[in-house]
Length: 586
Image (cartoon, rainbow, N blue to C red; front, side, top):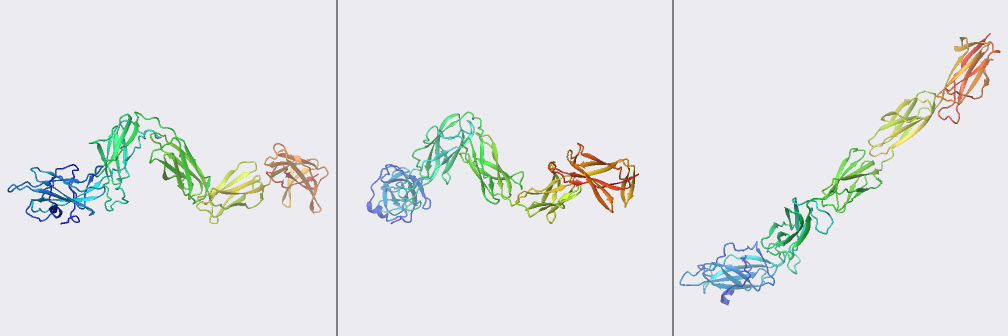
């Protein structure tokens, strides 16, 4: 009967010659009749026999043999010297072929049965065995299934982060006696020729199972091994002696095929490491950038190469984070380059500080670069309550700040002519955006309102200038008494005396001009009698004028001085002093 579609499994194949006995062709073809009383053959303990859902794997020698050999235990004769035969029926699961083989019973536990069924790479096979007594067959054994993998896995790739391969750039990062990890990887176990995808009929490959390795010699029988994971990767951690070494690694698939040539990783293990190099760090950034727009900070570390997995740390400081805020670490390429992308939300100076912490061959290094991020212009203005002021008078200054984001502080400065700029007020503006203060100008003064800026609005200033009059102080001397007319104080002079008016101008206006004016009262009004020409002020900024009174008996006079600034004095305006009143008596 035909069991190829329903009975699957496999037993260990002994791909070698075997002693076989002739078997009746007709009986071998249909395996009938069946005598349930006949003992079935035995499969030796530990036989390599897979199930229908889990076939085992076997390799295939080159060139492939013309048939297959399996081992079974044929029952020994028990009655009247009857000698049994063991019969094996095998088939290709794809239904393409089947074959039979037999062997005469012998007084041994296990016998080999040759079946003339050629094996092909990637195919799945099944077989079962029966006992034949010359007239009938026993019930067959449970079927055995196996798959054939005749292709060697691809050669593995060996890497190590601590000991670069000979002839490549880089230097060792560890010394003799320190543990290091070698990583093995393979791209897989090839499918049979002509197969496009695994799992298709007759397109099976056993897959990578493990790696075998040898240090300074190729791995042979009994070589050390490490398992391969599902991705075809494995690793070996070991400590090595000083000197030049070669690690040989082969890949082995489940069927037992070995990669054709071992991977040879040649490297040097030093007794001590050279001192770490001192790299330089160069940063490249745009000078300016828009707020909310992405910018890139790129960098280059010298003294390459750098190991995989190295990073640089990035700290950004801005108005919102004056002590800095950490950005994600940037991976470092083997050639020492890296890139940092950022979208600044705070305007003004954004400073990027980059640090490489160093490794076994490089010292730590850091550098920083600043990008000016755009901010909206802020509206600032400043006014005074008058364009000019008497010496020492109180000026009221009002500064105004327009719309901002999170800063509402203004500072007001005063800079007198020829003096230093000084802060006179700082504070938060009121609900109308105003900040007011007072100041007593003694000369022309420039007032400045300054906004320091905030996260989204740029710093701004505005200025205005107010003038100040000089101060003219006057006094009369040479009189002998005082009286009052119309509530005004008059000094009284003898007609033989001389009236003297003393003048002091503040601030010091040495060598500047002062004029004197005299008026006499008659016919119900004051009339100018004379105005002097310019007289230079002394080094102490004083001057005086005298008036003869011989012909002025019973007359009323008044006298005043005027400071007249020249082009050499732009700090104060020209100023008249107050009238000084006097009268003359006999």
